[in-house]
Image (cartoon, rainbow, N blue to C red):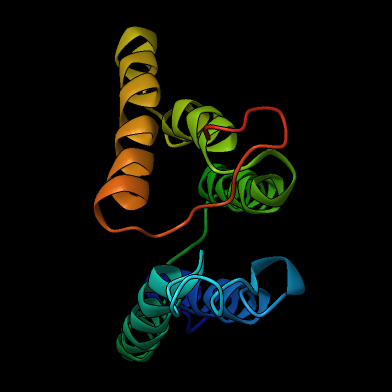
Length: 153
């Protein structure tokens, strides 16, 4: 890919992914905002996705100004694996709720990106998602998708 930099390619992929996810937030499964005073499970993610779309477009435009770099197969494999894992995570949220897929995703993603400390990844995976769930559910009163197997989360 002569003429394209990593920044422009990654920025473009993030923009496309963000646009798809933003569109996905309008699916029937997420339309509970009338019952929750306008703050359903997609209230905050839509704000984040809109910010990501703007920022990724800025990265893409800036990357197009840079000189192109050679793409190494390992980097392409890592980026592809991260995209596939993220896509699987996103679609598993609807089937399994927020907490279980987030624990699995938070544990696996560091290994895809090259981090190799299993104990640290496990500690983060077992503490970060429950903390995020608690803050969103109890503090911000933003309903996250719940698991069909557990009523509490």
